[in-house]
Amino acid sequence: MRATLPPHSEIAARIAAAPDWRDARRARAAMADRRIESGARHPGPLIPAAVLVPLVLHADGPTVLLTRRTDHLHDHAGQISFPGGRIESTDASPEAAALRETVEEIGIAPDRIQLIGRLDTYVVRTGFEITPAVGFVQPPFALDPDPFEVAEVFEVPLAFVLDRRNHQAHSRVFNGVERWFHVLQHGDHYIWGATAAMLVNLADVLDGP
Image (cartoon, rainbow, N blue to C red; front, side, top):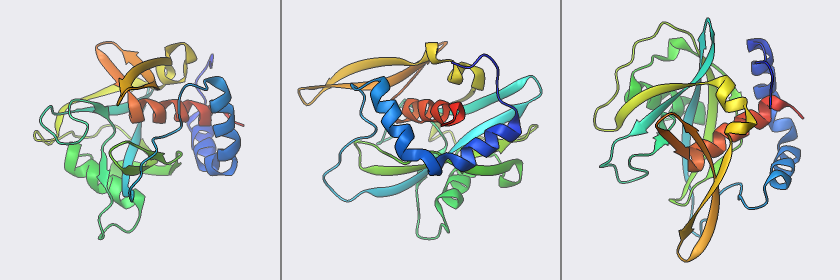
């Protein structure tokens, strides 16, 4: 648990350095709660995908911008997520895919986003291998959510994400097996699964090696 938020420069430096100590970080996370897997096991070929983890730099403290997906979508309907999607053949990189999807889903232009690095990749049970690209978002910016995909756009204080008291472990039975996963409950928003795991990973990265 952090008493104070790191300055923006330190956030950027720690995100940039995240790949250098990934294995040690994963080992430490596994020791913290052995019930929670670091990602799903999927038998088939994985579909490359990318999301943007937007850190909005408000004057009174940074926030994490999230979306709630509409209930009729085929994948992850109604869940809390980051803007993102599958990497297309025309995307030059996972970051390019994340920026493209962010424009398409919520309308934030790339010129409002400063990319600062990546979190750990994450595999979900639907077969996507997700690369989370982290970016600073400088207000003001206009939102234009796609009503087909996005039911709501909201922000959670970064201080809330970094406070370990807000990290919970819940379980459900999938195909007869009890599975444990990360949860962050912020107001009426139940953040779980891959999105919660990425937020916990963000907290681990900002805690440093």
